[in-house]
Amino acid sequence: PNFTPFLAALPKCEHHLHIEGSLSPATLFRLAKSNNIALPAEDPAFQSIEALQARYERFTSLDDFLGYYFIGMRTLLTVSDFETLGYEYFQKAHADGVHHAEIFFDPQAHTERGVAYKTVVEGLTAAQRRAEADFGLTSKLILCFLRHMTADEAGKTYQEASALGHFSDGTVAGIGLDSSEVGNPPEIFREVYMSAKDAGLRRTAHAGEEGDSTYISRALDLCHVERIDHGIHLVDDMELLKRVAANKTLITMCPLSNVRLRCVTKVAELPIRTFLDNGVRFSINSDDPAYFGGYILDNYLAVQDAFTLNVAEWKSIAVAAIEGSWCGDDRKTVLL
Ligand code: ES4
Ligand code: ZN
Image (cartoon, rainbow, N blue to C red):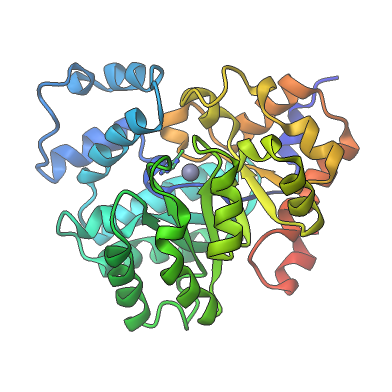
């Protein structure tokens, strides 16, 4: 049977989306021009939209991708740029059947190049308000720390958001940890995670994408995260996997990302069958859709193509995604 209409109509929640990773090559070039930002002339990938798109199909690793990701976002300068970025994502998410989205942003990648934290959040929150008014799409912001930077720098960013009241007023719902995983284990950021826990913030971290399963256990045990982003390597420690299942910890999977960054050679290699068989809760997400060749529905379709799940299995995935969301119980009831 053709599952496309069913998967398109299935009410979705997105939990793993870097908003800067939704910057399309077309918008990137347009903003570079209007903001007078020079792109690397020595890299032939930046000669045209098509060349850049083609380069995105040949990433060799997470770090290879991150190089382009951090260059791309240099074109974002103003409140309006961030509002456009956010709203363009929400439009695509709405078209794909997303009812609730919890989106990552990387403030340090902006403050480091002179764009104020406040500018970023002002633009993104304006986009959030418009998406809710126009589509009924609810959303949350998750502030990510860059793990290639120091714990001290993470602490400064945390303090800046806290001083603006963004944690107490709900502008930022939680924290995350992204960028180069191997060699930058979660416990480096233990202190900021403990502050976040004390402040009643939600907590997640990228773990087990390129790093081994101990990155997952260390994120859980030392940083007290409530979710694991990617978590592919969870299957290498079945005892840990059973604990994650028992605790209903949500794994936010990103199939097309994992293939593009060569964590796996094909979607069928992902441990989705093992997760289903062992009751591990997971959601399916798009990560950096402008870089990895598809938005959330493309990821759902790729999973169906690889695993031929049945309707009951898809409904259980959709329910786990709602229950694992960080919206209020009132919103969950509507989503269910
Ligand atoms: C990311 Cl796929 C991935 N992994 C880690 N950090 C990231 N930042 C943006 N995308
Ligand atoms: Zn990610």
